[in-house]
Image (cartoon, rainbow, N blue to C red; front, top):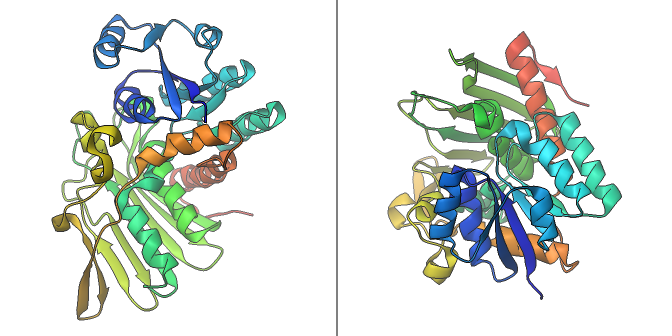
Length: 342
């Protein structure tokens, strides 16, 4: 397959560590460079990806022959940049939160459908090692029928706490938490949420309870100020439970340390036995080897979709579904009500 000519918008934390290394490591992608006007970030790009160019604008990137672009910028810019890229004829990957609300997400998805362009939310946490393990156990029937899914994105960095660029904890961490719950347990009927609004005006210490149409429940926690983070996952089924504690999937740490799928090869995403979870049935307990993480699969899959050789790794309408739940959670936390979804 001819590699898809790919650009990136933004070279902050996400662009620098989550996107650029994975784009550069994917044989299915030709990494052209980054749209950034920051002199400091241009210098970093030149040092870390010497073959890549710095562009002043999306228009300049498109004129250089890009076919696709990944957007990793502050949350409030995602929708206008996504729509601009689509109008330039570019396939788009947009980081989370895909949009600030479901209406904006739906508008972008419908624009991509009208233009016949590939569009995916960057839900890389579907390829986390621990979540892949959860899905494997559920698919194999190891836990029976799942009745409750508990998931946590908790850390202790109260100062400065959630950044404005992420849109607050509900949108930032919640985008992953809700997406994983929908992937595992399907559509949602009712939403209840609580949060604490920080002095910055941004929400933190978020709790979201989902009742799925199947009858199962999801209890989701997100926090920047939790001094005692809980288990990453506790998944309860009719015949047993799976529990795995922190720290979180190691792919983020590996990328920040300068490792990539290309340098680690088959060892990419593997977790050491001390970080494996366990399956419990009352007093009986056994260690469950963790399935290797696979963030490296996202961009090759998206490139194949651009070439018409496979499905999108994440459908755009999945972001609409997640943001519909997040919109309901925001209303619930603000008004103190349970919100029913049709």
